[in-house]
Length: 248
Image 1 (cartoon, rainbow, N blue to C red):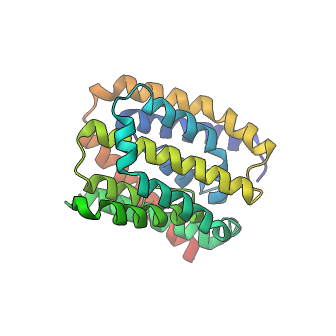
Image 2 (spheres, rainbow, N blue to C red):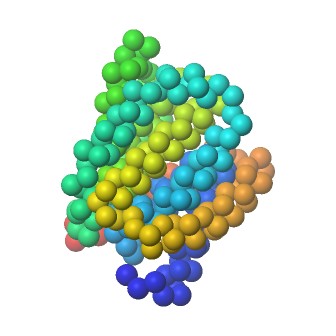
Image 3 (cartoon, one colour):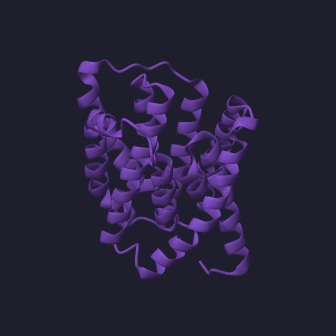
């Protein structure tokens, strides 16, 4: 796609919005960005554009948080599964221009939103955490390779661990960070993250950081529950639209 002024303005607006959502609720940058950019470009291209913003914002989210080492050990099987699943899904990355990729992205966003709105009370017994975590991670990696979005089933799995609020935010940030690194490596292996793409990804960092800073500034001035509902409802509509467009 030609990088004209209209596209650059649209991409910048998407990144500011996605960064804002992440600043308020701690997630949503790749989900919103790839979902909206998926309207005008292939999911793999959008994922490549998001590599640097994802890396920096997740490091920012994790910076200075205590207890990270213990939490990392607890979810290590899931993180390892993400890496294995992402590289196992390399063939899916080569289908970046297909309607199937956009359809899978839409279905993934709609399903994630539906689960978030339903708020099922899943629980994973401690004795099953490692095995289920490894499977959830591998499936998340495959989903990331196909769509560029790494929320399913990792996010529901982390919620099912019954972590306290701070540990959950750390676990989400760590999961997204590892997923971003694995996806970036897979994209580079598939030849989809070259020097020019890295430059564009670096340029995408500024609007994402600006949006995240605004979101953090207003976090305590908005109803987190209402904001979360609007985020998920909008994501569901976007996902359904992408899926329907791919089937048309």
